Image (cartoon, rainbow, N blue to C red; front, side, top):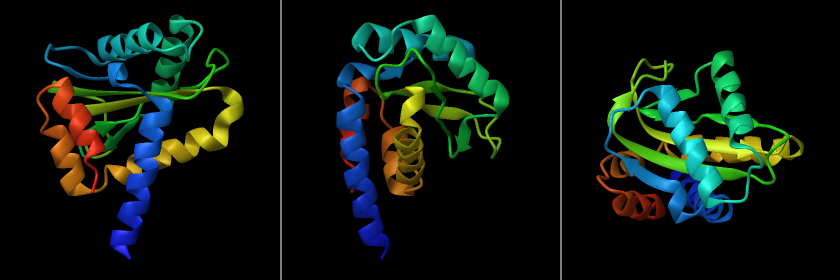
Length: 165
């Protein structure tokens, strides 16, 4: 049963990556950043490499507001900052792997190395929540998570993300 579930999650994850992201939105950061600097950099990258958001400051402010509600650090070294807002034209995903971990006040107390940002239009709530749930489930797979987190470049990260077994 676990193998069947893993295959289903794998298929959903690969479909989500292809539908909601592109290789320019998946990247590795070597420099030390604060949480807010990282979130800003991710929003800027989305604005520069997609047509998914109208105004980057609107998205950034919505991400910060969501962080105030509660940590998006889901544990296991992963955070999924996310927001639904009126300035989103479609669902968008950016994935960043950090050389140096950042404190996201995760539930398990572990600092974060992998950050998956999700933005969505307000009217796409069900699809947005299903996507966030799929992301969380995919990274519960320890072997996959460790393979992704051990990447040391943008190219290796993209390859590792696509290697979900």
